[in-house]
Each structure stands twice: as C-alpha cells, then as structure tokens.
Length: 320
Ligand code: SIN
Image (tube, protein in one colour):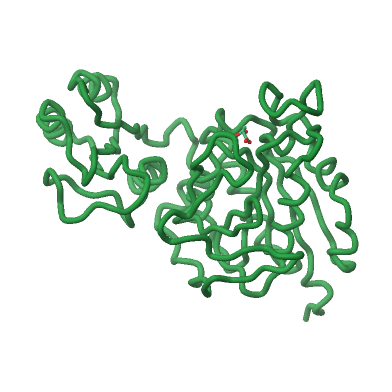
C-alpha cells in the first residue's frame, strides 16, 4: 500500500509558448521567440517553488517546444500519451502543462476529451516572454501548481492571471493583456489568491471518456479525419465550402452569424456537402451565449462549444 508521502508527486510537461519565450530586450513584449527555454529552466526560474511544494516531488518532461500557433495533431497525440502515462502512475497526483496561449483552449478541450483519469490536469501559460522585465509566467506556474495540488481540482483546467477556468468555458479573448482568458458568461471557476485556490463552485467529476479517446491516442495522425472551420460573413462565397468538399474534407464546423444564420449561398453548398457525406456542425461566431433552437436546420455543435473546440469534438466523433 502506498504511503501518503509517496502519493504526492507532480509532473510538469513542457510544450513551449511565450512562457518559454525569449526576447532580445527586457522591454520586448512582442517580436520575441516563443518556445526557447526548457521546462526545467522555467521551474528553476520560479522563486519560492521549493517552499510552496513543502517537500513534494516535482518531475519535468519536455514533450514539445513550439509556438502554439503551430500546434498540430502529432503533438496533441504525444501530449495525451505522455499525460496518460504519468496519470497512470499511482504516485503522481496530477499534471501541469506549460503551453502557448494562442491555441491553449483547443489543447485543453482535446485533453479533457481523451485523458482517462480522475486526477487533475492544469494548463498554464504566459503573455510575456520569460526575459521580460516583469514576466507573468513564473506566477502562473506557481498558481497552476497550487491548483493541481488542491483536493477540489478535477478534470482539465487552465490557470492564468490568477483565474481558474474549465476546459469547456475557457477562451482567449485578448491578444496582449496579461488576463487574456475569459470564461465568458460562466465566469472563472475559481481564483488563486496568495497561493491558495478559492473556488467559485465545486467542479463536476471528470466526464466519461469519449469512446474514440483510444483512437486519438493510438491512431496515426495522418489518418485523423480532416475537419475545417468556416465563418459566415458578409460577402461569403459558397465556393469556399465547395473547395473544401472537393479537397476531401470530412467535417465542417460552421460559425454562423448571430443565432447561427448563414449566407443564403452557403445553405445549398452545405446541404450538398452533407449529401456527399461531410459532417456539418453549426455554432455561432458570437463570443458569448449559445445557439437557441435549430437554426438553418443544421446539427448544432455540442455543449454550445465555440468553433475551435467544436472542431476537436467533431474530429474525435469522426474517429469512432
Ligand atoms: C504561443 O501561443 O505559443 C505564443 C503566444 C503566447 O503564448 O502567448
């Protein structure tokens, strides 16, 4: 039987991002290079980390080193595999993942769908490079470790700028501000204050795994179904839909205007796409709320997801 002490190990997986970014000058908050420093260097740069851990063990592993605008399915699969490996270790209490902010919400939703564990996974990031005069990464990392070690933490969460977000609600809403993430109408599920999480509400137990999660961990990524995102807009041209179908797209997530309305020309093109076997899901390009009713008679993206997370869900659905 494991002792309580042995149960307290935490793993930090590095994937790059601005949190690991470096710039030529301390004043540079743009024009830096993301994904330069290794995850161990990030941990070494957190003042007070040893005291905060109170003797608990921290392990670090570099899974990727990229600017998250370049996040790809192969890296997602590697991250899920390494995450699953570590979560299966009885001594490991949970994972922290350092990640770029730009596609963080997509990775978070992907991991929420495919990781089979009751243990928490907390993604964190930074808006300023590690070389900035006042970098935000070290505080975010310390806060993420406080959250992952909290007994109330469940599922896959994001910690940034003192706020805790669920995978379902989190969205990047600002290109520059330190508090670049929002949970929209839901609000954050908690805050980190003086190293202690304060929860807005209790978190649901980790959702049942999607049947296709195993496929996401094992199927060669070249065989993952191609799912694209389209946004309806003034002057939208049906040839955009037709070109994707002709090129072999398997699924289309369409962000409609307002309550999911689409340019007239798109309706016929999407109906034709469906007849040709392309799965279509509708969501709204509005950043808040979710669709009401069944606009345009098209199947809705599940759970009121935004287009980018709905793309992940549809891709996983099509793997089944
Ligand atoms: C990235 O997403 O990797 C770069 C931008 C950031 O982390 O803020």
